[in-house]
Structure formats: structure tokens, C-alpha cells
Amino acid sequence: MTDAGPPPLAVSLGDPAGVGPELICEAWERRGDARLPPFFVAGGAGLLQAAARARGLDVPIARIDHPAAAGSLYGKALPVLGDLDAPYRPGEPNADGARLALASLEQAAALAVSRRASGIVTGPIAKALLAEVGFAFPGQTEFVADACGAAAEDAVMLLAGPSLRTVPMTVHCALSEVPARLSVELICRRARIVAAGMRRDFGIAAPRLAIAALNPHAGENGRMGDEEQRIIAPAIEVLRGEGIDASGPHPADSLFAPRARATYDVAIAMYHDQALVPLKALDFDEGVNMTLGLPVVRTSPDHGTAFAIAGKRLADAGATIAAIRMAGDAAARRLAASSPQVR
Image (cartoon, rainbow, N blue to C red; front, side, top):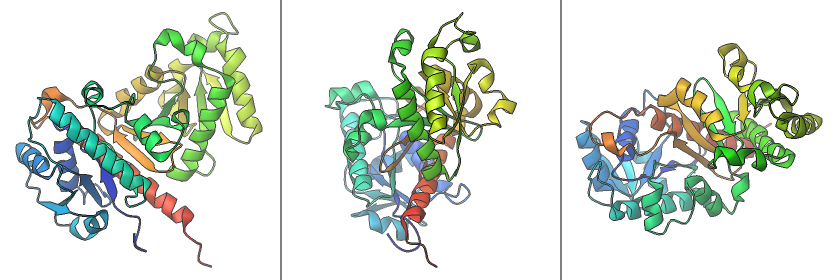
């Protein structure tokens, strides 16, 4: 790291048979117009070269031995750390590719944790394939949390795009399980993490949190469910008592309308699709998955491997570009906050 800014970002490949490698190459190609901070890729030099050619891009690759070398090369070539590699076979996922994806993720996370990278941007993975080669986590969020020594329940998923930021209170579980998982303690704990993340990573000094209801019409005073009265409203009162600007419970059917979105900085939803449907409807090609509550910056494009269109020049690089930019902005804010103030 120099006085000019934080160290470069570490980008993991994701599954090499998916769209991740080609989108990383396009992100580097568009780095100037997209205002992207310096980044390097953990492994896959030959793979990335082949992915760039398949996409019709002329992307020079520079192998590096340590992250600090990325900064001086970034303007001329895509820096790639180490010798990890695999053949490029778009749309043909296999165990060797999964091993490379895992090794890339492990290396990128370790460098972020050790502060040799200012954050990590994770490429999309195929979880089932990773599980077959020894990946023991539900997803990359839990893996990065574990690498940081953070509790999994403190790793909060934020979905962010140009039009909306939203957080699902419960994530990968059956809809029938959601009511039993909700509690005053859960909502308060995660809302505190969200408020802190808005301040630390987005520079919003007094973040406004809009908390969605679970039931239609916010339960209509218990006629359509009582979770609003028993759980959500009491949690909001606790948060307000702590000085957090939390409002709700808001009926979810109107919370994401344009005029409503102007009244808050982040919407907290009660379950996965309540948060992700509006985000993907509004910002599908620029949606970013950011993990709040960790000691390191972590973002990811909010889409999957898209094996069916890998290598066909069809995938949109917008979300990858947005994920790299968002990680760089957050890393710069954290660095500025930790630097001694000159008087």
C-alpha cells in the first residue's frame, strides 16, 4: 500500500466454465471509462487469455508473484497472480474447474484478510460442483466470513444497484420456515450491522432503514398475521431507541415504488425473494451482492455462472464492473477512516 490509496483488489475467477472469466476480462478492458480501481485476478492466466479471445477482446495478461506488483502493471495488462490454471471450456463445468475456482477463492480471501489486497470480488460459482471437491460452506459469503474469523450470522447480504439497496433478513430457507426464524433479536442484530455498513462502506452518515412487513397489508392489525405486531414493530422501536432511523413495518407491495424509494437508503426485507425480486427487476445488469459485517470488503456480481451462454459473447459485464467499483469505493472509505487526520 502507498499513500496514493489502498492495495489492489483481489478478484477470484469463479467457475472457469461460466461467464466469470470473460466478464473479468471485459471489466479490465473497460477499466478507464468505468472508473475501476486496480485489481488482480487470483490464478487462471491462460484461462483468462482464452476467455478474452472468445469474447473478441485483446487483453494482455501479466503474471505477478505478489499483489503489490499489480498497481504498476494494471494500466497496461490484466495482472494475474500465480501459476494456478486450467483449460478454458466454456459451458462444460467439471471437477478440475471447480478445484481451480476453490483455489482462486481461497487465495483471494487470504490476501484480503492479510491486508495485501484491499478487498475481494468473488466470481460466480457452482455450489454443487464445489461441494464435490471439498467446499464445506453454503456459499461464498459463509466462506469469506469464516476466513475472517467472523460469525456467519454477522455476515449480512446486501443487494445494491443504481436504483435500490435491499437486505433479506432470512436468506436460503423455505418460505414456510421464515416466520419461525424471525425474531426481535435477529432484526435488531442485522439492522445494526446494516446501519454500520451504510456509514462505513457507503459514507451515509445517518442512514435511513425502511423495514418491510412480512404479511400483506402489514398484517392489517393481526387479521393477516401477527408477526408485525409481535416481532417487527417491537424491533423497530428498539432500533429507534438506539438512535437508528428505522421505519415500518411497511407493506412490501408499495415499499419499492419510485416515490417510496426516495425516502430511504436501504430496505430491509423479511425473506429472500421479497428483497431480490425488486432488485433484479430494477437493476439486473448492475446488481451487486455485498457482504456487510465483515472486517474485509467483499462484493460479487449478483448473477450466477450462466453456463448456457458462457463463451458466446452474450453475458453483460455490468454487474462485474459494478462489483469491482463498489469494492474499490468501500475500500477507499475504510482506508480514509483509518488514516490519521492531518490538522
